[in-house]
Image 1 (cartoon, rainbow, N blue to C red):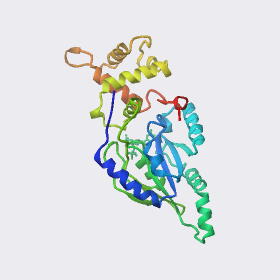
Image 2: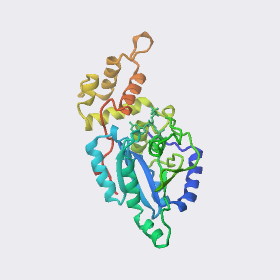
Image 3: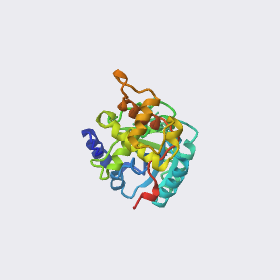
Image 4: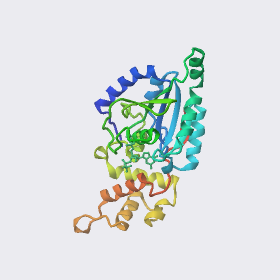
Amino acid sequence: MNIQWYPGHMTKARRMMQEDIKLIDIVIELVDARIPLSSKNPDIDSLAGQKSRMILLNKYDLADPEHTAEWERWFKGQGFYVYKLDARKGGQMKAITNIIQEACKEKIERDRKRGIINRPVRAMIVGIPNVGKSTFINTYAGKACTKTGNKPGVTKGKQWIRLNKNVELLDTPGILWPKFDDPAVGERLALIGSIKDEILNISELSIRLIEFLKEFYSGILAERYAVDENCDKIAILEKIAEVRNCRQKGNVLDLDKASKLLIDDFRSGKLGRLTLEFPQEQKI
Ligand code: G4P
């Protein structure tokens, strides 16, 4: 499946970021811990230049902990500060502030030598739609600064948020990049819900998910839907439809409904904590 999606406001968001980056000490990028690289915007590397970088592996609660640990090591190896989190939960924010300050210690020291004390670190927060940016800001700031909602592609305006005396955050609208060079990236983004479902072929996507689960998480489909995983992928989808009573008029199996159910179960974590891509596959 070849998915391309780049609403016009994302071009504008990119231009805005190019301007704003000059004011920033550190770029904090939220990625989805289930697909840390596919949900990372490659544009940010060129936009960020030499700025300090931090990766927040968000939705850690939905990702496979073993693979998240591998990703943590992998990103650290690439020079990023890294932290894994469930943005809906508080209690992690002191640790994050400490990492931000550690990442910006040279700048803080430079300021100190110039007699500038207690100037807050300025962080730009970036992330593709639906990665949990608004949730993170709400939790971090301790109040509802931004509106959250599951609407990929709906932009929000630029805003500075003073979190505490040490950190100011500049929020940016979620941006995607113009072209997914690898179709698998588009599929993974679609699976986690970062691309509008209306433009997707849900059945095709669910078949890809079945293939992946058979290969990397054998036993999961059998356990949840009592299917024989040795069957062909279409037969598995049919069985899911049967078991979950997805039927159209005339008692015909409704495979679209079964596909949606499977993908929803994945997105909500009902299939367990799963990671869709692994650092070993990366060639960087
Ligand atoms: P965005 O600003 O990046 O577009 O994303 P947003 O914060 O709106 O979050 C998108 C969805 O992801 C929300 O769910 C939010 O609750 C959920 N979410 C954010 N962070 C985490 C996390 O660490 N773990 C889990 N499991 N979910 C997270 P929603 O269904 O749209 O809304 P709601 O059910 O929370 O009301």
